[in-house]
Length: 278
Image 1 (cartoon, rainbow, N blue to C red):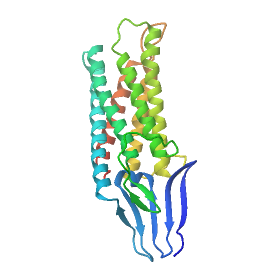
Image 2 (tube, rainbow, N blue to C red):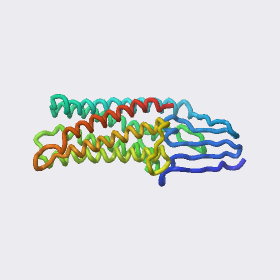
Image 3 (cartoon, rainbow, N blue to C red):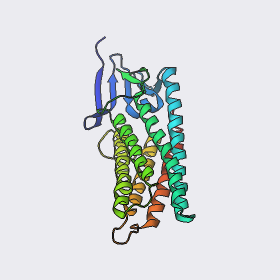
Image 4 (cartoon, rainbow, N blue to C red):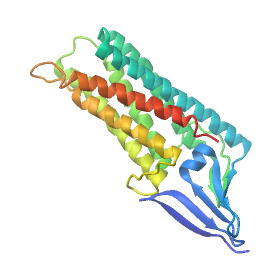
């Protein structure tokens, strides 16, 4: 029968789409995000027949649904709590301990969403010449040459760095230099990691190193809304720098509004993610 012809596409060293032209005329297309989120590959029979989505087995499908529901819900709740914390800072009492407590609770949900997103990648069905195969369950793996793994890992790392920022925000009696070093620096690093993760997410869905516009794709909207949230978080972090000369923030209003609107973006993206399932 002969071997199927293969064509690989992607961004840099990352393969995000593979196409197999089988000797019988059938074409199979595997896309990284579609396979790991929906558990399907596209199959087009010989001739002009339309493509159909061939699903993985029931084990993979059930696994993907459960992980997606947990990750998406965690980001919805975490984003909502961050928005509440920013609202308290901007419109409420402005009590530092109350704000820190709400932010910390939101951070725990972000940590959960980040790790479960990594589990989605680790335990997604793997492709073998266009067939999806269910791997054994794993809690960890190291696969830096997979763009989906790298994006999820960097996102999870960002949530952990944010956790340092959130824990340090409970400290009292800090000097301006200590505030910037212990609270502001981890905040900025976490935002950078979120932005890098979003860029890798675009590379996966666009199959190239530059962002693209695919408004008909639910996955693209999820990545785009999350990236907008990351940009707003970065704006918030930069304006939350404490000036050594005055001991005041660069702009507290922008910092609060950036956090509030950025957090809502993550909640909206979480709601959209609930629909991106098998």
